[in-house]
Structure formats: structure tokens, C-alpha cells
Amino acid sequence: MFHRSRSNLALWFTLTMGSILVVFAGVLYYQAVLDELKDLDRLLHKKSKLMTVNAKYDPRKKQLDLENVPLDLENVPLLGSNVPPQGTEFVYARWYDTKGQLVQFFGQTPEAEVTIISGFRTLKTTFYSSEGAPTVTWLRELTLPVYQDNLLIGYLQVATPLTSTQNNLAQLRLVLLLTVPVILGVIGLAGWYLGGIAMQPIRDSYDQLQRFTADASHELRSPLSAIISNAQYGLLSKSHDIEAQRQRFGKIFDVAKSMNTLVNNLLLLARHAGRLSSESLQKVDLKSELVQIADEYTTQEAAKHLNLTYTLPTGSVIVLGDVGLLRQAVVNLLDNACKYSPAGGQVQLRLFTQSHWAVIEVIDNGIGIPEADLPHIFERFYRVDKKRSRKTGGYGLGLSIVQQIVSAHGGHISVKSVVEKGSTFQIILPLK
Ligand code: ADP
Image (cartoon, rainbow, N blue to C red; front, side):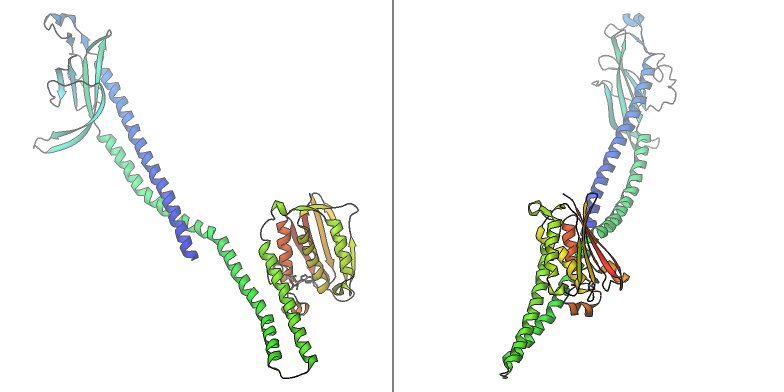
């Protein structure tokens, strides 16, 4: 399932990034074509302008040709003296008069009369070698109107082959054709790698959920079988010993009670995952809540073997939160302090403020927690020593509930513990 999702993620990433890359390469190529043509046109225009400088209006010829503007093209390169302008690669040069009739030309034989359209155009032409073999060539042609003293004296038409432009573009095409697939491959690999990173938290929480379900079922199995076996025995037994039957009911009652605690804890964990909604937040005076909890505790059986003291500030300490959940967190810590402290032990409950935080500390001088277990004690169903916890009726959910409650309030929980010396649990919560 995760492998398929990862492949899908990688595929969609590659398709998206690949399409962007292909569009980008297309735009790049189109821009290169425009730039190449612009450079070529600028050169063509410059050279044609140079040629037209030498075309002269010759009033002496007026008598010979009454209709046309009299011209002297003798000094025009290619058309007159046949000295081409420097570095010229013109395939042809033609001079048309103002009516579009051919006056003089160089290179390829043109049509005698054409409709003149000024400007640039790209055209395909076929050349024949001396053996008569045809070669198709693309040309860039410029038709330039030539003026002298604001009088149109004719049109110069020149054309140059697009070979070098085509070669440059072919090179660019080759580079793009080689690099685009390579980059696509790299994108695919990156997609696969990123897909793995994106899937990791989902995989972790899936694993956690599976472990949680398996642990919960496992924990529920033994009390359920205890209830079933006791009930079965009661049903099948023919004994009239009321005391024995009462003991069985007592056993069923105890087991069902502990199951009830477990199910309540599971529900608590399921309901309060994530931050609390703003509607469920209210002002809570931690001082008065802790006084109440400590008073209730001193009278409880579980704490009778201990010496419970508390240190509280003079003023109230207000935080925003769910009073029931906050009480539950402190009670869980006190429960543990009592459970894991021998008779005569000391348990301290402290409350104070530090900068913008309210700090609650539960300190005991009980059996402590081994260093190796400290990083795991907040995990669900984690018990330092299963036998020890069974004796005290713990399922390993108490501290994970505390941690979940504290996180839901935007706070933090930490622990310091030394085996045989005791433990200090510290909760910090943001002050209102
Ligand atoms: P449990 O319900 O089993 O006590 P918790 O989540 O409350 O589960 O605690 C996890 C483990 O951490 C317990 O198994 C216990 O061994 C250890 N632990 C918690 N609090 C204390 C404490 N104050 N002193 C010693 N050990 C503790």
C-alpha cells in the first residue's frame, strides 16, 4: 500500500515537473529562434542600408526614360561594380523601380515583375548544382524601399541563407533533446526520494496505530478471559457455597473495573488527540485546582502510606485550558508517585511561575526509573517492569495521557529520575 502510494506520488511529481520542464524548454527554444532571427535581420538591414547609400538619383538620365526615376546604380555593390560588401553572403540582390519592375540584379534570376512588399520574409528556394542536383535552402529576404531627398527612388531586395541560424538552432535542439530526458530522470529519482520522505510520517502513524490496536486488544484479552472463566465456573458449578460464589463475583467485579479504567483511558487518548478547540478553553486557576486535588489526595487510601506536601504561590496562577483534563494530568502524576513510592515516602506537589509559564512539579523519593527506560515512558502501553505495573494495576497509559493533555494545552512535560532516589515530573503550561 505504501509502496503504491509512493510510486503514485513520484509519478505525479515527475509528470508535473516534467510538463513544466518541457514547456520551459519549448519557450526557451522559441525565444532562441526569435533572437537568432532578430540578429540576422539587424545584420541584413545594416548591409542593405550600406548598399543603398551608393544608389544615386541621376537627373541626366531623365531624358532617356521619362516614366521612371533616373538612377545611377554603378557604385552599388553587387549590382554595379560587383564588389560585394564586406563579409556578404547574399544569395541575390535585386533592384526594382518604384513600380516593381526589375532594373538590375545579381545572383538567382528573378521574375521580371513582382508586387513589392517591404520588410522581411522567410522563404524556401531550390538551387541546382552544375550536375543538376536540387538543394532546398531556406532564405531570409529583405525588401527595402530606398529614398533620396524624401523621394522614393526604388526598392532593394536582398536575401541571405539561413544556414548558420539553422545550425545554431539544431545545436540548441540537440542540447535540449539530450538534457531534458536526463533532467526528467533526475526529477523521477527526486520524486521517488521525496515521496519516501512524505510517506514516512504516514507510515509511522500507521505503525503506531497498528501497535496501539494490537496492544489494546492484548490488554483487553486477559481480563476478558478472567471474566469468562469465572462466569463459566459459576454457571457450571453445582456448589452451594455462597462465600465461594461471592468471591467469584468479586473477582469479576475487580477485573471489569480495571477494564473500565482501561477503556476510559483509551477513549481519553482517542478523543483528545491534537490541540484543543478554542471553544473548550476556559480560564483555570491552577492554584485552587491543585489545593483541591491535594486535599482529596491526603484522605485517599493510596496516599495514606505517604507524606504528601504541597508548595503553592500566594496569588492565583491562570492558564487557558480544560479544567477536567488538567486535573486528570496532575492526578495521573500523583497516582504514579504514590504507586511507585514505598511506605513513608515523601511526595511533593509544587506550583510556581517562570517567565510566561506556569510550572507544576510532582516530586517523589520512590523507586525511580532506570535511565534506559526514561525516553520510552511516555509511549502508550510502555511499562518499565510489567510485573511491577501489574501489581499496581497499571496499563502503561497514564503518562501518555498526561503528555497528550499537556501537548493539547500547548505545554511540555519532562522527567528527571534516579533509581532508588526518586523522580521529578515537570509540566509547563503557557500562562494566560
Ligand atoms: P502505569 O499505568 O503502568 O503506571 P504510566 O504510563 O503511568 O503507566 O507509567 C509508565 C511507567 O513509568 C510505569 O510502568 C512505571 O514503571 C514508570 N513510572 C511512572 N511514574 C513513575 C514514578 N513516579 N516513579 C517510578 N516509576 C514511574
